Amino acid sequence: MENKLQISIRLIAAVFLLASVSACRKDPPKKDDVTNGYENPSSGMKGLYLLNEGNMGSNKASLDFYDFASGLYTRNIFSAVNPAVTLGLGDSGNDVKIYGSKMYVVVNGSNKLEILNAKTAKEVGKLDIHNPRYVTFYKNFAYITSYDGFVAVVDTANTSVIKTKITVGNQPEEMAVVGSKLYVANSGGLNPPNYDRTVSVIDLSSNIEIKKIDVAINLHHLKADQYGDLYVTSRGDYANIPSSIFLIDTKTDAVKKDFHLPVENFCIEGDNAYVFSYSYTTKKATYVKLNVKEETVVSDNFITDGSESSIKVPYGISVDSSNGDIYVSDSPSYVDPGELYCFDKTGKSKFKTPLTTGDIPGHFAFLSK
Image 1 (spheres, rainbow, N blue to C red):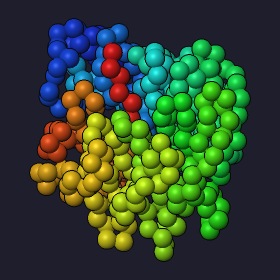
Image 2 (image 1 turned 135 degrees about the vertical axis):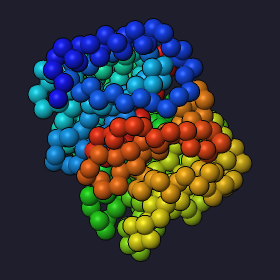
Image 3 (image 1 turned 180 degrees about the vertical axis):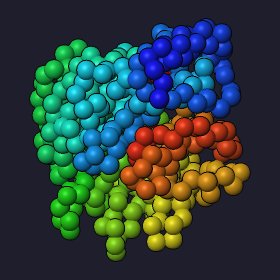
């Protein structure tokens, strides 16, 4: 284990390194195992935050950072930057997003929303919310789903107070904003076989639920494309009803297509949706690409060089909008540390991070400046 002097020397070296490299770096990330005394040395950093969930009840949620300029991959920076925060990031990190100068981290098992300085990961606030799941934003407000059946509304200028709570369906999950409406995927995931099967529609001018859209049971992920349509996933019942991904037309607020594709997670970037699934029966994954403009499947494998076999159990996915790079996290056991893989926009492997991630890597936030 390094002593404090050795860590300080490494941090000073990192500062000089950052000053001498270009932000257009294309090399794979370097090993950087600083987990204590970390300090973000550059206000102009660009990079990727990776939120590791940590197994429920283990209090092992953590935040990693990959610096695009220096190529350094740093683990567990939250605890290093915030040593005074008792128990670190907490139990079960479930979502992370950057909005303005702040980063919002939803920590489900610890019943809190951590608000951090996006450039330094330093804690600037914290809000207690029971059973929080996901966060999204509209104008000057943050919206956070709670499994207690509501969406909390928080003024981003005053993150210590919940302005209101909007009642929605059972155990709401991910959200998306289209125009002046907020769409919320309701799961009912804690009440099998009595799952919810609706998407709540909230008028953001009044913060009132105005309708529900019937879709399918046990909804989870929900994202909007650039044409105003919504893609929402159903987890099924894990037995007789399979998972699938559905398309909702927000002009009519009605389902217009069931793709009949197995799905674990997905992301949308431009005209492409990247959808993956994993079967615990066959121990195989699928990586399908959709064209959201044409609303069709364009490829049954968006990883084009055969390197998908190195991923044991895909868990999280995101795309860097600046260059089209596709990031897929691997969580082989859902308990132990995982891996992070990067593919270019053509689906060819670029690198795997030299360090393992934290436990159950699943959520991404890109720091653009």
